[in-house]
Length: 498
Image (cartoon, rainbow, N blue to C red; front, side):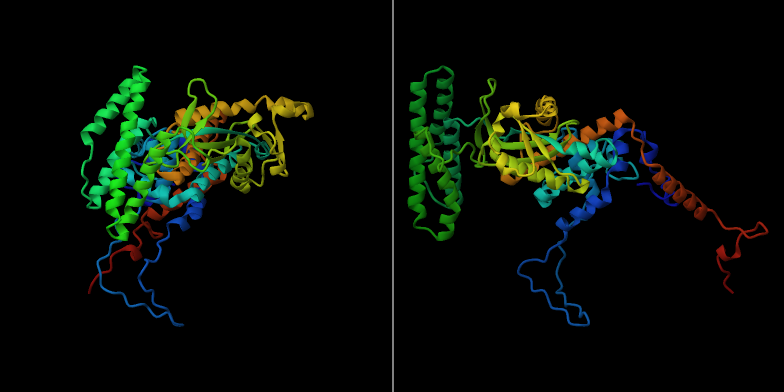
């Protein structure tokens, strides 16, 4: 954390001399187990052998393989792992985008100290796209490790007792996806545009692209819907559906004469167009025929949560587990397919148990709402408490059940302050990563509040004594050596050449 005094740079400003070490973020930087976290994530970033390149076998004496002369394409050096981990924490803790967090990092000394830098650097730590690749390499296992370490820090710093982790509150919410509102007119116009682009990329000449008519029909459908002239709106949408179906049949007919590679490339586009034509013609669909609500995000579900202000939300269902007493998040998981709330409880408790395994504690009681009724048999060893069995609860459980609704403001903070209100990451994996990272960002802000409230010191007494001893040793080694008579030590002088 601290640079050696013998190697201090006179022309650069040290961060520990620029900031207040009592700042909660500086205190948290001294409490985080950075080395353990890097060791647990290091295997995810190991360089792998390239496919298609023969690896020579080594004999008993370790014969070195013969390397062919070629240009190295390793690329620029990697950004330190601690800096990348700190950027993800700071991004979701302070509600910043990928571009915003790297820009603000270069202007905030406290953030750089939290990232393990010794000197202030007025520059961006990396490009914003590096965070995208870093998240992809981390995967669900890596981001869950980031969340687990926030729980471990809370326990080791004495901010929460281990026995408080046994009682958890479980609830679900919707993590909306970054898509436009899925109207039939907009989806059909998108399908027409994508079909024309796919045909052009495959070298298929279309008789007509309906570019001008498609834009006019989309504009008319929106105006008719606003004026509540629904008969005219349906006629415009029917014409759009006819255009999309005609383009689809023409591309299929002409692609049949081409090679198998081109047909495979067009398969996904044609299937999506067929789904949109079918779902706009028939509003009722079966469970096997899921509706398509966004061309670029086919995993999006339409979820009805019973809210008067927003009856339907388009995204993925996310389960949240927090402690009953101190509102620390101990689990966050995305569930695709819009399952029933009670069916998500076993997987949610399993994730919370895995994340808390370093503390030696696992959930023993789960407090939930009435959406989790009837699943007690699926969670052996964990007592399910909800309002539906109020007569069978003890007096203490009835009292603790009043804190079940404390998870509602937690969900509100996740959406308003930690970026869960709109997920911009791609695919189902992006939904899962984003849910866990939002929970990790919430826990970071929770730790900062508790550090400021309880006055946690920068370091423990043993760590301070060790750092002081290292600094004194460095100053002593940097001093010039003298002999007993007060002169310079002859061994330190430059030897004379005869």
